[in-house]
Length: 610
Image 1 (spheres, rainbow, N blue to C red):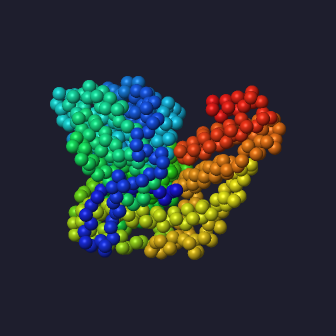
Image 2: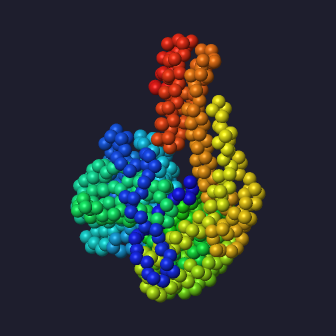
Image 3: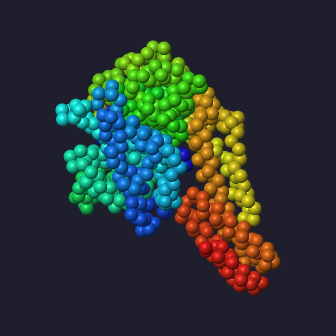
């Protein structure tokens, strides 16, 4: 279900008394979660068949060291493991995205992340295994199909022994997994060790990672790395939205050094603080897949803000492209900055002042100043006109001509302002804002979920000897009629043009991605119900009424049905159970059928058990 998303609260906090007796988050220990069969609570038997480096590959594609050469510029110096493959285009992207722009002035250590297109249709030998482990992940935590994430630890310090006068180097983790908090925590352990001891410690780290269990949703994992032990829980799509399944300390945790409350969540309040008077409008822009650019002074602030924007519509998955850190050297620079066509549906995070001029034609621009710990009350800021944005040094704010569909929610602004005045803990402010976005998104999605569920054929219409019925089509006028009595007004206090917001959303990439996912889930459900109907039939009695040729034809059709079912991404345990039952029925029926020769039985057996 689309509403079954990841946990929305990253930390367990004590709520102050001024929250009107409403918890900012529902906290429940991970150990109390009961998962459906096959969701990965224990060690999966498939892991016994993994080859060397398979476990590493389930977490990371590779580890890169990017340095600066006076003659060559940025260059990939080392790739671990050495057998890892990257195309020249991918290496070039990693080189440019692993260093802050020169104007950022990032002295010391800086962490940020980027996202770039996979250069080739490289297929992993772990494909089927990873699909199985990915099945129970929340929508926003599934592996990227056409993109990689790069998690960067950049160090720049003065060094008079070097011609350039500075030591500049980045340690970069390349992964398909959007576990931003986890990988940044991992880099805090690995990078200082690497800068002190160089390559031998990277090899040791790779060997440690290759001994980790795979990141199967639902598991509480203990992960040793370079003498430190990290304990995390991988969220599942079965977790209740808005809850944080915190990993609890246990008696056997004497060796655990770090317990991470979340693997992917960023601090929403800190990211949105410079523009939090406009959070509701930003939510609308992200929901509708509008072209957005975030202009920030550093890659760290740029990437955090873009990730915060993408996550504000959770548990709905953001289906358009987004680049937490984007440079003028990016391979998609021309594609995304051309003025010959409308800006694409993408969120860009930039730091180079050149973009203030290059992206002036973009409809929505967010200017972020230096992020401070929210210790003072933010001043009310009006939405600024785009023509006022001339340089990256312009004042922080939102530059757009967009008029929100919904009336502004003053209550959430007052609640957050009150928290700043009373010095409410940052974690509590973050929890309040995350819950607000969750409830807003759920209020919007529930009517869509209800209508799409009505498109499902009745179970009584499923016949075992006919093809499964198709879903009814999504008819926009019919959906709009349902909003009169069962719209978001049932769960949200906000007033405004909800109908207009839905009309706009139905044309967006986010609706297309969401509906494709729901349609796929419901089609698989129909296939499963059709298989169950076949299992309930008396195949022996049916076979006795047909000739040998007709029986073989029937078995071949059943075989095709089972093959197509096994190749789909339906729930593996459910499929195996139904398939096994159907296979047993067919085998017994054929063996008891005296008209069918043993040769035919052998052929049929091969078809099912090959």
